Picture (cartoon, rainbow, N blue to C red):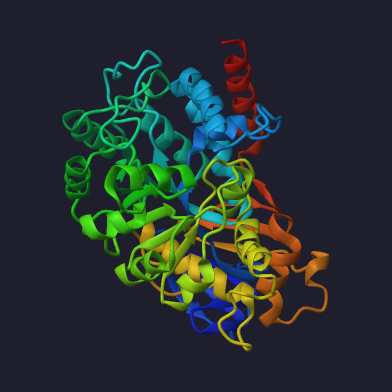
Amino acid sequence: MSQLWFQQALLPQGWAESVRVEIRDGRIAAVEPGTPPQPGDARHAIGLAGLPNLHSHAFQRAMAGRAERRADRDDDFWLWRERMYQLAQAVRPEDLRAIAALAYAEMLQAGFVRVGEFHYLHNAPDGRPYADPGEMAAALAAAAAESGVSLTLLPVFYAHSGFGAAAPNAGQARFVTGLDGYGRLLEASGRAIAGLEDAVLGVAPHSLRAVTPKELAEVAALLPAAPVHIHIAEQLKEVEDCIAWSGRRPVDWLLAEAQVDQRWCLVHATHVDEAETLGLAASGAVAGLCPITEANLGDGVFPADGFLAAGGAIGVGSDSNVLIEAAEELRLLEYGQRLTQRRRNVLAQTAEEPTADRIYRAALAGGGRALGVEPPALRPGAPASFVSLDAAHPAFAQATPDEYLSRWIFAAGRAAVDCVWVAGRQVVAQGRHLRWEAIVQNYRAALGRLQSS
């Protein structure tokens, strides 16, 4: 057992003072507010539950900042995708482990404690399956073990290049699998993560472009109680192509044709009309929003205001990992609404609750649901996965507890994250991952290999 003490901690019922937390076997055994520290307690300033990161493509961390030169007058998502495919063709298992370990360490330093890895880099560079279908999944599991992040692994089913079962193109060779091969991939992925504490396995039909209706239903049924994640309605061209194929918009089609419920996470869902927004909220599915990536790729802005008002569930993810910053995902979520609506504090539910508190709590609840775990919280029985903020950071000067989240999300960001624990183990101290130097060294070596390949 270990004990920590916080001057202030955010409990499910609100902020509390002088909070002593006991940890046993990776879980919170007791939470005692109004309790002075005891000899041997590790003392910290501001404690709160760490955030779930519900959508990541870890290997794309290797191209962060490398696609910021205009390729064409009409540079867009689809041109970026071609650059990403070039990287995908070169990444080997040892490269993936090193790249993912860096991405996961950066997530922890930012205040994320669990990641949903939307994993589609399955095959060898020539498109043939590895002898072990879980070769690349094992690299991700090793990266999660090295960094200490909790992992929800979402192996992707990808069979087609476009609506109507179009044949995959050469750039997608490493992603493609049939249903039988996907079943073997799931089994191998389960073995790969078996040694990780609190790991979860889900399924991920890549998108309506990449699966047929029959394949979608079969993939979703393979793990009946597990999370189901799907990319949808990220780009206007995708919406137009879906209408041309089916006569319906993507989210409308999915809600009508699939059994969408609380297991599902619809990633992006950027381009939805009012009926789709209301239908998605009523379904119980989580809208998986990635504001930094959606801004970087020019996707658009999800109508979070109307969706939350209708009772919808949201979570945030780092997606392409162009910048890994938990607070910035939440900040940009709100700022996107402000830019499109030309008003402030759009996502605040009431005048009494700060905007930051609402979006943080929403991201905890929706992110946990999407990743197949209970929402993170400082409460007995929950995993001991939480964050401490540095009260000495100037953003917290003269702050009261009801301002802490606002100061972190809108003013300080990652620079204010002091320590991070996952399942009772400390993985970040004084803002730095405990294995940072070794992880960075391996990452540099991997990028050197990729540059010379």
